[in-house]
Image 1 (cartoon, helix red, strand yellow):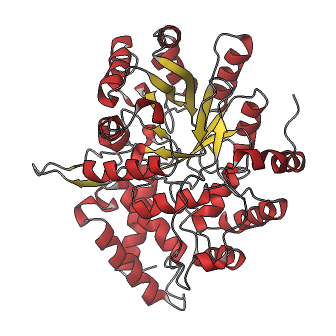
Image 2 (image 1 turned 90 degrees about the vertical axis):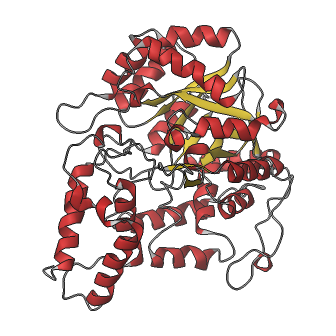
Image 3 (image 1 turned 120 degrees about the vertical axis):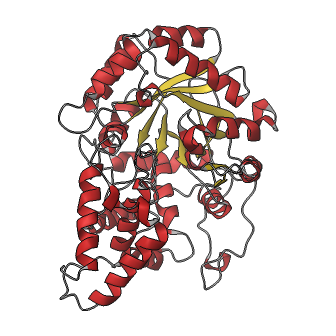
Length: 470
């Protein structure tokens, strides 16, 4: 099969986009925002862009709600944090009101609380008004190769979500293997925690019984696994109704991390088979909305009235085989901004595609740690805030507060910004200096980050700043 040529695709898209959007695709005018960049017009209602699932005819909102990062509040009993159910209800109500109807969760999201919170919020609305996607997340379970554990997790999802059928069900993290020497491969995990314990046959029977409407998988990392699952599809040993992949304008040609696969390769493998695609990490865990200052200025000069994040969403949505684009919208302002980006979607033209490719070339020069704040590395047995530490480092890179030596013209300012910001964002007892190198975190990292190595590197950097020995 031939790969999809982008120029040919753009011609096709220009015809199909008019039918996909439900209103005029004219770009927002500058008058839609004030000089400070705040919108002065209402968030569009009734203008969401939808894509049709060819397998079921489902009319799926192009903006999907990723339920990994629901807002948290302190637990009243003093033990950690719990999901803020009242705020989740508000967010879900607003999303449904503005046309979002696809909600993606997992037994492991929100520290194990996401399915329940999502179910409570959605149960207040007619069942036919939304689609629920959840996952068999055995790859994160120590006992995930026990079929009884896998089936119990599956049945518990129905209980937590308060439903009697699942619209979209996924093998969670296919291709995900351990990090470093001796770590299991993605194929090892797929066999041990899915194929060899009879879960494929079990889920196919559940689909035949109508308890699963669409069967698919989410994919991370090992290309051998993706090729194997596509071979299953081609031979008729499996029919994947949809597949969820990480795709964004940086990963399209320049994926980061070990065993990373170019987004273009994954997209074409699925598009050639006409398999609908759900996108995760369109913002790379927020990194494409928190760019280095000069790149923000570059995007704002080109389109001052729209957010930096909207560029990434429009890029992903402009690919015709994408059924839904997931965004973990913790705050109402994120939800409002993203609804604007898809109500309706204004597809990128060829010049804008080239503009983002040039932006990517500039972006990859920055030494960002590829953390997307998925929290799969947590909790740390020694109490470290791993994502908080890595994200603070990334923020300082973006803000230009990562000095290379005392000879930097603004060394003192950068030193203070890094150290003060570190203490404010990560409590001292949870900082990198307390990392023991136990490596319980890395095997669960979808981005294949050598977490102990990065924590040790950051700790040495912090000490050199404190001692003025950089």
